[in-house]
Amino acid sequence: MLRKAKAVLCREHNKPVVVEQISIDAPKRGEVTVKLGACGVCHSDLSAINGTIALPLPLVLGHEGAGVVEEVGEGVTDLAPGDHVIFSFIYMCGKCRFCVAGRPVLCLEQGKALTTPLEGTTRAHDAKGAPLGIFSGCGAMAEYATVSAENLIKIDPKIPLDCAALVGCGVTTGVGAVFNTAKVEPGSSVAVFGCGGVGLSVIQGALIAGARRIIAIDTLAPKLEMAKKFGATDTIVFNEDPVKEVKKITAGGPDYAFECVGSGELAATAYRAIRRGGLAVVVGVAKPSDSTAIRTMTLPFEEKTITGSYFGSCVPRVDFPRMLALYMAGRLKLEELITRRYPIAEAPQAFADLQAGKNARGVIVF
Ligand SMILES: NC(=O)c1ccc[n+]([C@@H]2O[C@H](COP(=O)([O-])OP(=O)(O)OC[C@H]3O[C@@H](n4cnc5c(N)ncnc54)[C@H](O)[C@@H]3O)[C@@H](O)[C@H]2O)c1
Ligand SMILES: [Zn+2]
Ligand SMILES: [Zn+2]
Image 1 (spheres, rainbow, N blue to C red):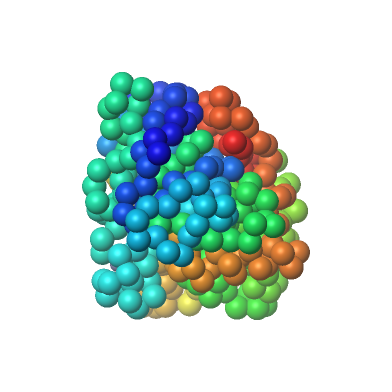
Image 2 (cartoon, rainbow, N blue to C red; image 1 turned 60 degrees about the horizontal axis):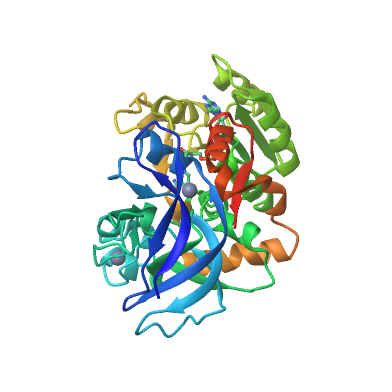
């Protein structure tokens, strides 16, 4: 059935988001309609608003969502109404060489489902009937969303939906960057640039992986206080030369550095910080115009590596349950990541707070 839903839209770049009443179509073949319980406010949503992540507008924002299945389309056999699910914001075709090799974040078909279910038309329309794109195939900042069944992972209904939502992006991105991309070894030293929802998740992941030294760097002092609660052993307020201080603490540089801000220059800073043979991981999504300059000579003579990490190099069906098992075992903090909950009407405030760096994570609750 057709459903009315309040939704958070980006209609114009660099303008505050708007909350509108939209309509969500019934699911077509292979699709599912979800009633949202919660949706985290990720910096990538903000990047869609300011054009860093350039997607066609208007767009229903939100990709870090969790909710309850309302209705399933034809051919959907593994989900039923009442099931609790987390959204996964990557499309996986299941057939390309990357999907079959267990690297769905690199799926060759992904570009085809950035703002719609794969088929290319949208199930979301505004009050005048005009079609609306859905961010990363999710559009989870809305009371209802109709998405491809492939974008949903079933979870234990005992897990609170606001905590579960964070696994849909920030937590899996951060912890996955540590576990899957970097494969951080016990006893190692780690530097983390940027302590938002993603960076704090890198810090928690590093702690779980057994890192001995975890250095948190942020421009905002309150973020560093948060970082300590998630496992940072040392903190540095970002300054002109944080590398010097990082190298001093780690006697020559950390084994790993993670860039969790989204700046070409900071990616170079992370690379400069690591020791000989170290690994720098770029998690932040920088503007398309940014570039990263590294001293080429350090590649052969110091055997340093710089790489990226998309969605924690995860396989959602493997890694979401893994994150939730760590949460259930009391080893992964999710509740503590939620600084503030907002009703959907306060979405503009939630984005203003994200921009001002007030929250570990802000979450829209429905
Ligand atoms: N690779 C992925 O799959 C993936 C997934 C999610 C988010 N992201 C990206 O990761 C980045 C972080 O996301 P988030 O939601 O945690 O953002 P956030 O806004 O919550 O956190 C960013 C943090 O960086 C800090 N910061 C800003 N400039 C800094 C500097 N020069 N040095 C150190 N710290 C600085 C801010 O104070 C803030 O605490 C964004 O670029 C986002 O788009 C990437
Ligand atoms: Zn995100
Ligand atoms: Zn694929």
